[in-house]
Image 1 (cartoon, rainbow, N blue to C red):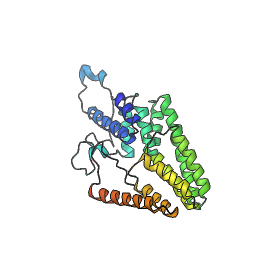
Image 2: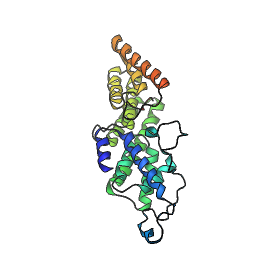
Image 3: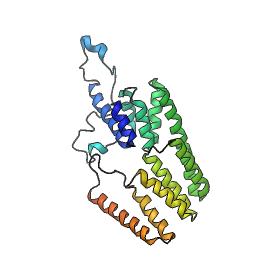
Image 4: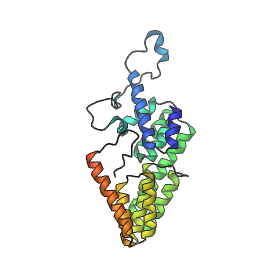
Length: 258
């Protein structure tokens, strides 16, 4: 499992990291409260007195859910129980994937739970700090954006990017932060800078339709109609494709249609 985590991380496939961890936890939850560790096996029970309230052991195998197994996401409440079932070696990868996939509230809940229960390692404490700082900086940026103070908002989004990753680690949150910075620059009529930020967002999520549309608008303002047309056509293709095939198959494309 650890090797698979490292492989996915090297490819910046953070959604799949979280999905793999949650599927692994769901499988492990089948051993909770089923009575298979009885008698002389009781001391071997890896989950003593574990009572599940939110995590459905069959969530990833149920056929009555429209979303495919490889795109399912546990509820925020269920992730706390999932984290308690994961090995310590896996936990840091899981918490990081939650943060980078823009599930910060969930990462905060999981981190708080792990700190409370004592199931923690140094890297999780570092993630806890990053999650808190990410939430704080982004919310401050959003406040300034709503006020029309776009320069200050862009600066805060940049600080948030620096917290989220020291290098180009990918992840939905980084794509969104670049997109937000692009919107700030576009609002200040700085189309060239906006185009750069939208391109960064698209490089992280190639199917980030809103970023593609905004980049097209930048090219219109810069009088580059050829690039504008190419981006508009790409946007329309994505929208039509999303309507026809809302769920891409495993390992094919991205589920990012936002």
